[in-house]
Length: 196
Image 1 (cartoon, one colour):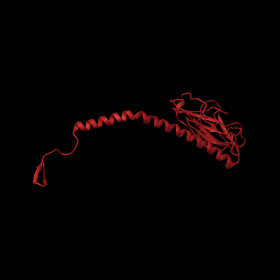
Image 2 (image 1 turned 135 degrees about the vertical axis):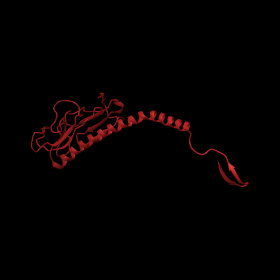
Image 3 (image 1 turned 30 degrees about the vertical axis):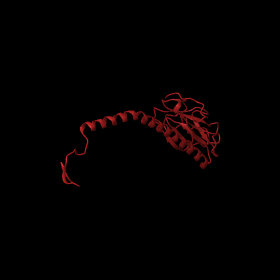
Image 4 (image 1 turned 60 degrees about the vertical axis):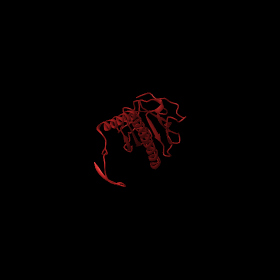
């Protein structure tokens, strides 16, 4: 109960104090819980999209780094699949295990020379994505001293997850050595995913 001073003089007001009742609070929490349950699948898709994009950017960065090193060293640089981060893998398969890039003076795509310096080594631990080179030599990409894709190593990488073709991404290496990212809406994409 409080007092107020109005035109008619001093009087009393009778009313509720501000605030929420327990029932109103429970209804608000119930509405909030329903909104969270409805929006959770959208966040899951967002996380999957970001994971895939980060792999696309990692592949582009590694390929562009290898090309840049070939230009600056005026020598061959090879980027290849690797399971141990120290040598190229010769067994056919996907690139999920990781990759290395190294100065390849004899252009044989093998880390065998003491001058073959590894400058990029990335081991991937990703079970939900599948990274596969589907054209050109499947195990390596090589750039020559002019930055061109050497020895027919131009090609396309596809990056897929369990959602399939509609969400697939790609990275293409042109014969001139340019690295181009492809998205699912790109009309140049003519390949499909196999789920990991």
